[in-house]
Figure 1 (cartoon, rainbow, N blue to C red):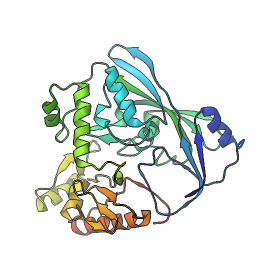
Figure 2 (figure 1 turned 45 degrees about the horizontal axis):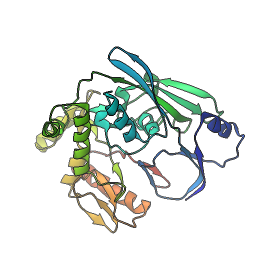
Figure 3 (figure 1 turned 135 degrees about the vertical axis):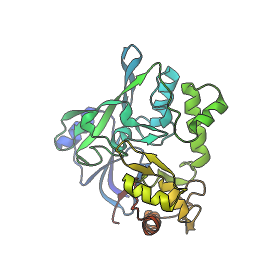
Amino acid sequence: MARCLVHVRTDKEVAALFRGDISWQGPLLIIGGGSNILFTDDFMGTILHPQFSGIRIEKQQGDYVIISAGAGINWDKLVEWAVAKGFGGIENLSLIPGKVGAAAVQNIGAYGVEAKDTIVKVKTITVANGSVKFFSNEECSFSYRNSIFKDKEKGRYLVTKTWFRLKSNPMMNLDYGSLKDEVKKLGSPTLKNVRQAVINIRRSKLPDPEATGNAGSFFKNPVVSSIIAEKLIKKFPEMPSYTDLSGGVKLAAGWLIDQCGWKGTRLGDAGVHDKQALVLVNHGNATGREIYNLSEKIRISVLEKYGINLDREVEIIGST
């Protein structure tokens, strides 16, 4: 429950709200699809729900095309649109829940691709005074599941539109996990087949949020130094690890949680998905507090066994 819910569809509406032409009660919480948020308490402020629409081809030059999309567009609808047009670059991000605005805030990623790989610029409106401000890709300070909007400038800007640089003659990224094998089952590595392969894999491993309440991956994959990774792998030779662009080594949070015996566990209506330990699920009537408490038990068990502190990917709203 919140004191107030405000839907905004245009820059003009948002600017009027932030200038004070329309009254609202703080604090302010901006949400898109709400698929990456866990409420542990009622929110005693104003929830702002942006519904900016529209997908547009802005520029085509050679093999490249610049498109723009409103922050309120369903993310997977944008991917579907791009693939239908023959524009590549975001097909590996198929079926990720949420809105386009979250792509810039969260730097969503899957199967070796991140939103930052294609984002050109982001249009925002300043919460303090309603002024428009553009951020280039570099100014967004993207990192693993993070950006300036989620970190340094959290709560100071509302994303209204994002520009993406895609390719009309793309090279497919099939090097992550079982994606290549799944694409082979469908035929040649076309944009359509890559998208369908990603959808097939995700549906086989992840619960449908429409049927079973969940926020997708609850924890981030931890990145550790090569020295720490070497020690862990020596002790646990079967531990999956991947070289990270940061220079460290990325470990699989789902594997760590599974090895601690959590996969399929259920505490009341709060549980861990039986096919992917990285996903916490609500079997019916679990409260946000109960989901959070389960996540704490998981986090502590991984820390005790492996010495690794898992960071939550899901944003917690309320007391912890």
